[in-house]
Amino acid sequence: DAKTTQPPSMDCAEGRAANLPCNHSTISGNEYVYWYRQIHSQGPQYIIHGLKNNETNEMASLIITEDRKSSTLILPHATLRDTAVYYCIVRVGYGGATNKLIFGTGTLLAVQP
Amino acid sequence: NAGVMQNPRHLVRRRGQEARLRCSPMKGHSHVYWYRQLPEEGLKFMVYLQKENIIDESGMPKERFSAEFPKEGPSILRIQQVVRGDSAAYFCASSNYRTDSNQPQHFGDGTRLSIL
Image 1 (tube, chains in turn purple, brown):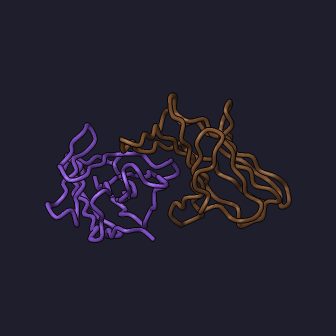
Image 2 (tube, one colour):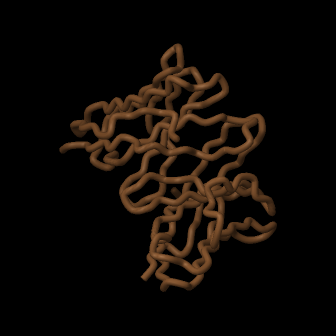
């Protein structure tokens, strides 16, 4: 079972920031938070991951709360092409017996023109 | 999703036939994962392989399914005696896992398997 909780859907206006929340209240100290997205009929696309510090790359920013029980993925200027299902996944970053990703139901982000 | 190559993109089989799905990982990656996505459902982990070794097959059905990642060549997911319920999108991912790192998995665009 997925160890994260996400809202099933969200809307965002084109050009505005999209803030996607994720709860992971049972996260362990050695588990990272990963974000992927899946655009219709394509394979999941890696976005970003982090342990406890906020992270930023060319796609998005990841804000992790101090207690690490929740996080927010921020797409600073959403475009229509960002319409996708976004998955928040917690996983042991290294040293685990397996590296499998457990996908939940994710958040369907619909960017509106 | 450039880098992880899956073929074929679409595969049609009749019930009882065999399906072979191939995955070439990103250059430099030695770890391969297979996931299945049934229609209108989320992705489910099937198997995790390193070169010539199966590390975790906890998500593989006990019968008819097998996977390999030989020393040379792509990883193969093999489904024998296919049934209608095998119709799904099968995704492969690869990573450059090291014990001291947290390298993400990168996915291919999948093989859509349809069983007639």
